[in-house]
Length: 174
Image (tube, rainbow, N blue to C red; front, top):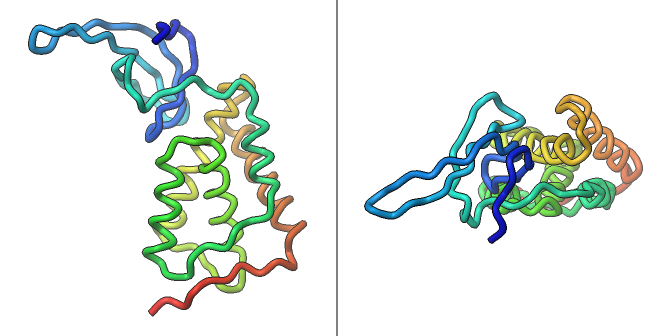
């Protein structure tokens, strides 16, 4: 694997986007491991991640895949709460921008539909997806988080109003 340079932006599958501010080598049980010291973009904290972690990747160089996904018509989510939460949680934790964007879009559309409403868990997952998408956009386009969040929200609102006649359906909770 190519060494990740200082100043590079990376995406961590569960933590989101951060910028590499240092490298450290630590010795554990006689083995040396190189760590990335990463300042997380959405929150004000620093983490250390093994450089060879399968949970990291470079930030998108072109975030259009996010906006293209947000502009597609929303997919129906399951009506049953647990099934819906598991589906969204899996998509958000995948670390795949297209899946995260689709989960945020679908959850937003579900919450705006006649059948849906915001649950505490649903809102938490939506906010997590929004933070991840916004951080990826902010890092790749060198803009601030608020601007990036607004762009994501506007893309979903625009899509929602364009598809207003579309109904989102699902099973009734039992």
